[in-house]
Structure formats: C-alpha cells, structure tokens
Image 1 (cartoon, each protein chain N blue to C red):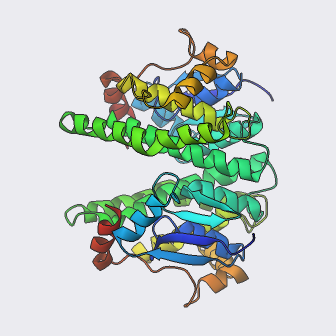
Image 2: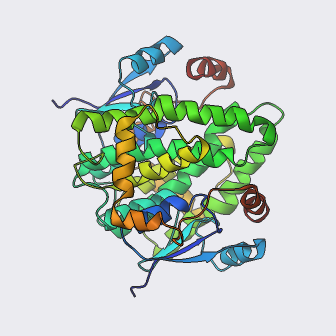
Image 3: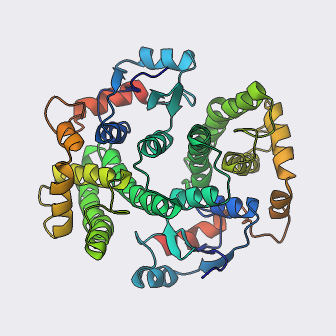
Length: 222
Length: 221
C-alpha cells in the first residue's frame, strides 16, 4: 500500500523538523497528525503504535518507524540523498552528526531555565562559529563544489542548511565570517523543493516559543 | 594503505566501547591509542586529526572517522552487519538507536552527583524493564528466530548484547522477567568472535570506577 508518509508529533519543530526538511527537499508530500494532549499520546502508546513509547513516529512504506535517526537514514537512502557508496555515506554521516550536535544544543536551549539561557546561547554561538561552521566552510572551500559530498545534493546539505537558518534565528550575522557558507545557503535555499519549503504556508514549523515548550513539558514529559 | 583500524580514546568504555564491540564481533583486529592527559587530547585537536575536536576517532581505510554513529554505520556496512536491504536496515537502526538511548543512561550513571544517584538508578531500571527490554523480548518471541533482524547476525544483536551485559552490571537480576533475552544473551555470547571478546585479556574495557571519574573529567573538561 503506497500512501503519503504520515508524521506523528507535536505541532512544532522539535525532533521532527529535520524529517520534514528531508521529505520536503526530496519532493515527497507528507501528512501530519499533531499530538496536542497527554491523552492522545497515551492512546498511541496503548495501541502499540510507538515501539519505544516515544515520538517522532512516521508511518512510511507499511512501517511505523520511530527513532529520529532511523527515520532520517531510511528517507535519505530511499530518495538517493545518502551518497553513492560507503565512503560518501561515511562523510555524510560525519557531517550530519556534527550539525545534529549543534541542533541538539539549540533544542536543549529552549528548555533551559531563564537564568542559564543567556550563557547557554553564548555557548551555542561559540560552538557554531568555532567548532562546527569552520568544518563545513573548509569542506566547501577545499573542493570548490556546490555540495558537501560527492558533488551532489545529499542529506548533509539539507541538514546543514536547516542548522544554519536555525542559528541565524538567534544571531542574524552568524555567517559573517563564513563566505562559503553564505554562498552555500543562497544556493541551497534556491533548490526548487527547498525554496518551496521555505515559503509561507509550507509544513515548515515556526521557531520554538515558550508556548510550545510549556505544552511539550506537559504532554511529553515522561 | 591497509592497516588495522586504530582507535583514539581514553582507556575506558565511554563512547568507544560500542565500536570495540562491533569490530570484535566482525572479527576485525584493531589497535588503540589511549589519551591519558588533557595534553594528549589537545595534541590531536591541534594537528587537525579531529574533525569536530572530539573523540572517538577511528583511523580506518584512509579516513580519520569521528562521530560514534558514523563510525558504527561504516563498520556495520563494511562487515555485512547491517541487514540485506533498506527495510532490514530500518529495523536495525530502530533497535540500535533505542539501545543507544539506554546506553546513555547507563553510561552517565557514574557521573551522577551522590544525591541524584539513587533516583538515576531507579530511572535506569524502570526504563530498561518497562520501555526497552519488553520490545526486544517481544521481537524475539514473535519471530522465534535466533537474531533480531532477518534471521541473521547483525549489529543490532551486538549492541543489544553489550547493553544487556551493562545493565546486569548495574542490577544482576535485571533480566529476571525476560526469558528470551536471557537465552539471546547466552546464544550471542557464544558466537566465537564475541566469546573471544568476552574473555579476560581482550580489548573489552571494564566498567568505569568512581575513582576514575575525576581523571576523566580533567581530560575532557
């Protein structure tokens, strides 16, 4: 049975956002079912839909997939965004793990108490500009190509763009010392499927706000 | 240039242990270079060996690979421990990711402040016996096969065994209610490469002792 993938999550970015990005970039239409109350989450847990009692969960190709990375790897491989061989995959994995770490810091930031938020934000920006961005800047500079790996659009590029835009939401000039990344951002944002996803009215979710954090803590904290 | 993979990490389990398990299970000999001081780490960072300034780092097939998952994926694929197709890989990934979550809990136990330790232990036991173990018990029960995925030895089996043993170190009778996991444990432990890895003198690392925590904190903080 072939239908559109169906995403089960809260109505916000969280761990599902990278999955939305990847599907959108691959030009795959998807449906979403939003979990808004503790009761609906409990219902899913009780009916056996969630292998480890957690979301994200994505119904795709007859499976109820859970675990963000498992889902992302499946989508990347299925839609040819995972390189052409083992070595390219290794590089894509390394790059994605780097941006995942940075994005994880941002995700975690939203749930920090108010008094540590500012210090935490400073750490995010420091890590972004001294540990992570330089790696991708150098990779692009060294091979001079449009994409991070194998001269072809891959999961690594999509994930990097998502991360760059998220960091810029905190510090608009975060890319000021990274000319390659600026050009990369411009270029990759213009890929038709991604351009479409970046337009208002798409399934891209807005930046996480206090309201979402409060809801997430209420519904998902267990 | 083909040589043995070379692992760079401190002389302990941490994030490198799953990689040691995977290489050992695949029958791949490897060398280790242990970081003992902050200077050792700094040296690696300065000479550009660490893509994101972090370990684990594994020199393999001409690459200096970093990021535990990337390394694990590469080894699993290379040595045919990753299923036969995309769907089997999906299942293996789901099982492995959950095991990694449980591992994180187990790994961080030694670092908990004294006043949080008991609560943390309770959380480990609760999650292990209510969230994770029942899933693997059911998987084995439903298909009745020896291995988790595709009736064939895979990375999922290796990582689950590693975690079962770690959980037992935490609470020896933690598998009491899981007969199939008990027989799985015995069966997988008997696979020749794994049996060898479980014997004294192998490159498997012992559990982190509380006395070693301060030294570790000094290197990595």
